[in-house]
Image 1 (cartoon, rainbow, N blue to C red):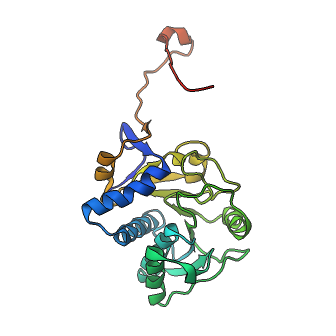
Image 2: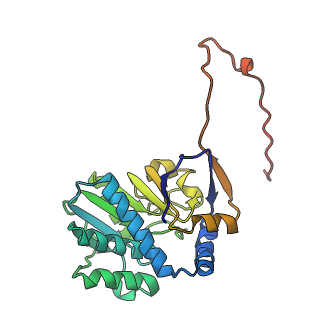
Amino acid sequence: MLGSKPVCSSVSQPVYLAEQVRSGERLVAADLGIEMYSLMESAGGAAFRQVQQFWPEATRILVCCGGGNNGGDGYIVATLAHEAGIDVTVWSTSDPERLKGDAEKACRRWRDTGGEIGTPQQVLPEVDLVVDAIFGIGLDRPVEGLIRDLICAINESGRPVLAVDLPSGLHADTGSVLGVAVKAAVTVSFIALKAGLLTGKGREHCGTVIYEDLGIGDAFETAFSPDMFVLTDFTMSPRQRAAHKGDFGRLLCIGGNKG
């Protein structure tokens, strides 16, 4: 059974670095006997559920797909939306004929429905929602060229955006913006929370963060130690208006690193 919950729903949640997730998801899936394409279908299905949850009245959507597995997730979203009667436009930032592996299989599934794939334009079509499936968690260089122009067009369009796993252009570990980054209304993150969703500019670009474990979250957390935790539940007593900080005791912070 898939898990779906907003971040900040418990006292603390483990947070991982991109490389931990990238290598770990394959190992955990293999141990559980789950094919990676099945995980991609689960990810696309989880993302489409958020479309239905947050934008139930949407009748026209634009899905922007990249050339990797994040783009594969996008093709699954496009297929499910089409099957649900939504008018779907798909733009690809790379040549679909060069897709490989699971992403190619997801693209073929979209095409089997009669779906077409266009190239990004300077002006977005009249849609109710944009699904950002351009870059996944592996981006480590500034966004340039056509993709930069597309991200700028998305941000300037005023359309709400659902980001798949991570807003494109955001660094998955630091939350820094690699030149430009999509500003999403909702981000659905898979397998585990990534540090970049919560640090740097992450909160500014992610909007509401939804965590979907795709059925392997518990096994992943058992197999891999998190890089950090996010603490989310604090209860503070009311304070008098004339209170002084010294009235509430003292705090010792000990940190260690070079510099």
